[in-house]
Length: 284
Image 1 (cartoon, rainbow, N blue to C red):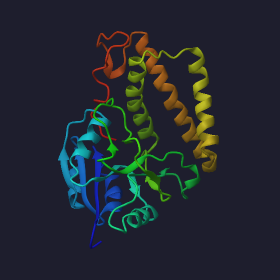
Image 2: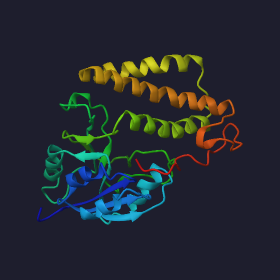
Image 3: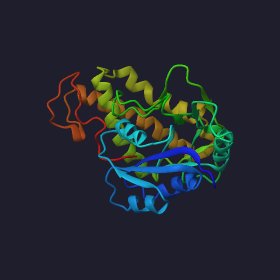
Image 4: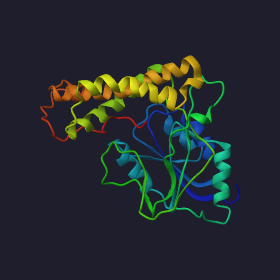
């Protein structure tokens, strides 16, 4: 594009050499600047980012929110597009973004993107399963990521009165590489979620532990239409239910006195601030 859009794309990454090229290719050549904030990759992520013309900046991982606040602060344009290394701007979504800036500047203050989960077993994408519309493109003068939020908070927020619109084109989300990767990611993310529950004094009881897994499966398989993916949809839905259950189980373990995996033997008491929340050394 002869006149790139006045947008800075920021991507937080660590060891994403296999997925990052798809994200970079989807924004290459039509935005003003691409910044990859890396927290110590050892797989060549930095070199791949540079090969696409992206700027690479190192920042130690202290949690999703601090990392994205840092990335947002690097933008010299008011418009920021904050996507993850496992996300891809689809051609229809790109066309909508370009059209929104056809007059030089977009009319809204922020835009929600439909987030479409893409699984490696799928032969056909199913937009009907979309259920999340996060704010991914926004004027940082009107909102964005806030430094006063907890480290595990991963949502852009806009100021009161900001005009927010929603695109129809998909942001494809390649959320996990395999079931092994999915379990690993669930184990990691549930540490932060359990620590949050513990900090808030939320000790899950018998009823919650019993009812959460079947309700989570029903939500994913029926309400979010995973049944359209057949047997694989069953697997995905059970994985979702497992994620919901394991965070509760880990929270209960904390109230029982641990040990808590990487949090073992910290000598913490109920209500103490967990010093390792969001500090796991990864950026996905």
